[in-house]
Length: 400
Image 1 (cartoon, rainbow, N blue to C red):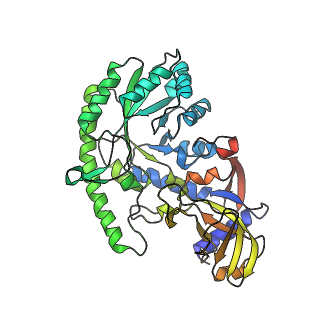
Image 2: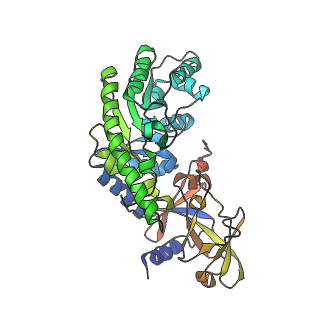
Image 3: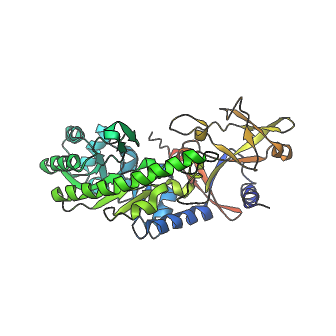
């Protein structure tokens, strides 16, 4: 029996009393993946990206482990909810225009002390000030550095279009704007190198493309390490009490942690390990989050139909954004239909061994987006479900 076949047998036994569709997290794999992130971080704390987990119980579990410290959130509403739930160190990774929540933040000392908001433009400071509605609490802010690699005088850009702040001088000028404005305190710098941390460099069947990605990433790492160090020096000259410099992502943990200027690492997807993280040479980990769909039809030889399954991930549309049939091994989509809103035909010889009501296990393309489809995660240890915990959706929270 292969390791994957053994996992399938465990998951089927653990959930024999549950009807699909359902989602699980294998806690043995989850904990092993957490340990690997800590190992790769080399002694620097790992801040957990909540968008990649979207389950308070699992955020609490990982933050209770040595090596993890703080949350990186994705909306201001979520940030305040988490702070009210008892989480104390929350970095909002994206700028917000949520005026009502900024008014709550500025009026509550507990929230203002727990949440740090992201800016990359003085206009965002003005929006926050206009939203205060009498609130006088000091708002903690973090500056975001654009990590993109620019070549040929800027005519070629590699990396996500995020912050407009690229140079040390630009970040230092915004730091001075924060210092001049009452009611704000600059506490951190963040830089997410998505073209390094979030792009697989070992694409199956594409050796030349994979080599080109590795060369790009090596060049980008060198350029960013030098520029990030310059940025930190420039900003610290304005704000010497800077509390943290955050960088990285699941795919670049050890590389980013090696930079002296970086004080903490961000990661989250590496806990669940969705399918987009199969194509990396920098690390390997165990899939921990899966979902099951029930077989409801047997249309013919070599084909079964499962209920639902059309859960595409965000990003540029393509086959890599689709969930992948994972267990039993050897199933594939019908190219004429793909994963459907209500039904999904699956092809392959393993279909002939599946009966009506059997479970087919899938992996989502991304991590936390799975939790937007399910209100409960069944936690598996060995071959037993030991708990059922709500996702954000299960708690009535859909932030985006």
